[in-house]
Image 1 (tube, rainbow, N blue to C red):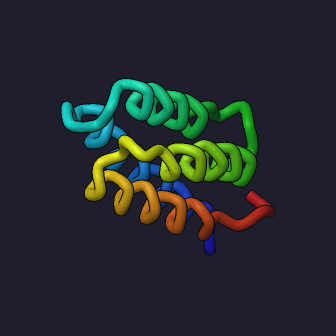
Image 2: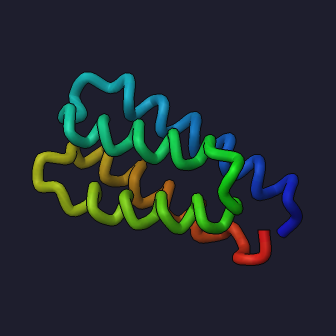
Length: 90
């Protein structure tokens, strides 16, 4: 996968994260975690694969929250899958 594709993956993930942040049915603690992921993904001083790995780790914790709405859980799983496509060499 080229860096253009990885950049597009990040862009798409940020768009989904923004929609979760703006969803009032999502508990505040989860929106806080989503904001943290957004900050991590936007941090250009870290390698892309490292930002993706850190984000996936947080997403795994979030997906286990019993208060997470089902539709948001599905989005979280999709985000993790997308971020897993980012190669380690970027």
